[in-house]
Length: 509
Image (cartoon, rainbow, N blue to C red; front, side, top):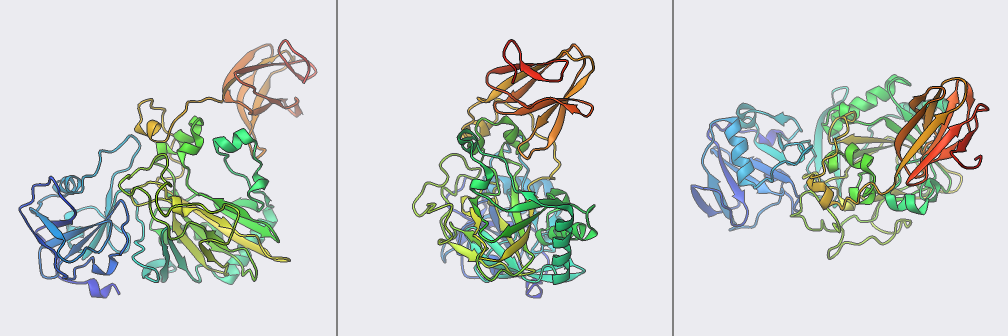
């Protein structure tokens, strides 16, 4: 299908824009006619915010820009702009022409790609491309085009081509058959059984924390985190995912191996983090760079066939994108005609995909602009009686996964956009060590892991800024204290010589 896109390269750049009134200084205008160009095979009946498809007319210097990757109507006005001589001038022209808003702190700049997801970074490579894709997010996202459309993705595994088939446009979902073999699936499951699986846990929203919601109320699977150290195959799959998504493997999180036994489920949820749901958790905002570092894509691998239940369900499939002109999102982005959430527990609505050994689903959790996609809501349906479902999650982030957290910026636009409410659960905790030897203070995270946060010398005190409900203990070598909890606005504890933590000025805990 790609051979048909070949043709003479262009050297003089002219760009046409399918849009309404524009303040650009165009040299001429005319009405669009149905003339095929390099973009033609990739145009859709749907509009995708943050995506612009550039197509060159064969045997011509004219290059057109299709807003949202959408096929225009006959007679729609086309604006032409003068040629550009340098890459810098081209970027400036496109930024002005497409009215790209100024970048916010921590936001990535837009980028251009060819039809195989390779970056175009100079006029020469652009001249060789019959079609190019400008994506505001700055990372490659396969265009969905239409249900049933197939991309031939080159060099995914051992030089082989994978067929990426569109399942949905709202949200964007693809499938790939035979992404991994039966032997590979069995090896990964065996690795998981060897290292052991634990109950699945995640980061609670502010509302769920206030309600003291338990993970088991909405997810009942078991999980294990896998990297290349536990098996070379896991490292190979990591690179295979990067080859499929065309996003560097440094953006990938560890593989999350999941096992669902009979009746187990995961209610509908998002893989991306809506900051409005964490409006008083500063750490979440900084980790996610004010919304500019998020899980842009999910690659979900099925490791076995499941005869009954266990489907992946997308309950909002087919619903509209509310307020598409709002490129970065905000509050009430799910409140427009045709948008609704029928149920987080039910599997009776939307698109359901049956588990099939070796199949992979790739879906995008964000729009091409970087805004989170409300329609990417998804869940795992209960597994049938006497059955088991094995799968792997690979999350792909907008930026490298180990990117350092942001600094707090009191004037960042996202604070107002997502309703920052301040660190209302802040809690100061103080420890005093009256024992004869020094110790360590450890914080216990939600998954039960212990993390050293400070040392605590004998007859000394240490104060920490924490959050209400955070749990701590003090450890002297192999001897540990009782566990204590920080209560707003502050808590103070004294470690006695018998290694018991008491409330300062209060009773023994």
